Length: 280
Picture 1 (cartoon, rainbow, N blue to C red):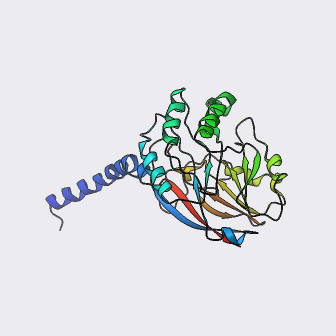
Picture 2: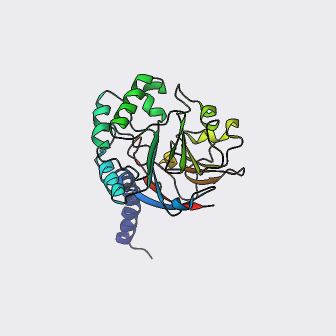
Picture 3: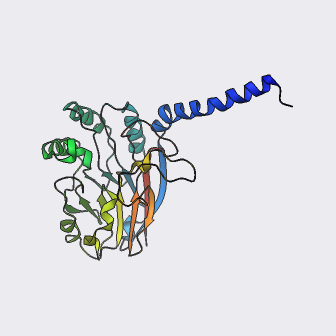
C-alpha cells in the first residue's frame, strides 16, 4: 500500500515534469545548437571537390525576440571549421525597426565564409511587414554585401566548379524561379538555394536534377515524440526538416534554422548543417 507521504512525493514529481519541460523548451533548447553532418552526393562533381565541405546556415532571425548573442558563438565555431563553401538560406532578420540592420551588421562580423565560395538568398522576413517591403530587403542585401556575402536574387553563379543557384523568396515580391532554372548550365555539379521548401512542388523545376537547400520551417520548433509538428508555415505539411527524396532526380534538404522566430523549442534543436560533397 502506498503511504500518504509516498503519494504526495509522486504527485509532486508528476507536477514537476511539465514545469521542467517548459523551462527546458524556453531556456535551454532554443540555444542548444546541433552541428548536423550529412553527405551531399552531386552529379558531375569535379574530382577536386570530392570531400570538400559545404555548410548551410539558415533563419538567423536577428531581432529583439531573443538574445541573439548565442548566434555569434555558433558562427565563430563554424568559422573554426574552415568550410570550403558556405550558403545562407534566408531570414536574416525579424524586422521591427531599423535597429535590426545594426544588429545584423554586428552579427555578420562573425559570419563564416567559404574558402572556395559563399552565397546567400533572402527569406520572407527579410522583406519586412507583410513580406512586401523591397526597401528593407535592399538594406539586408547591403549589410550582406558589406560583410562580403554575395546575395543571389534569381541568379546563378559558379564557385570553384560548383554551380549555385539562388531563388528569391516565394512570398516576397521578387520571386522568379524560372529565371534561375533556365540559367543553370547542364553537366555541372549544382545546388540551388530556395528559402521556402514549398517551391519544390512548382512545375518550373522540370528537368532539374540535383539538390535544393531550404529553410523556413524551423522544423516546426516544437515536436512531440511520434507526432508531427503542430505548426508549419508551408502548404505541403510533409516538408518538416531533413532530407526528402523528390523521386525525379531532385533532392531537398530543409535546415531546422539557427535562430528562432520565438525562443521556444522542444525536440527540434537549432541547426548548422555540415555537408561533405561526394560524387554521385
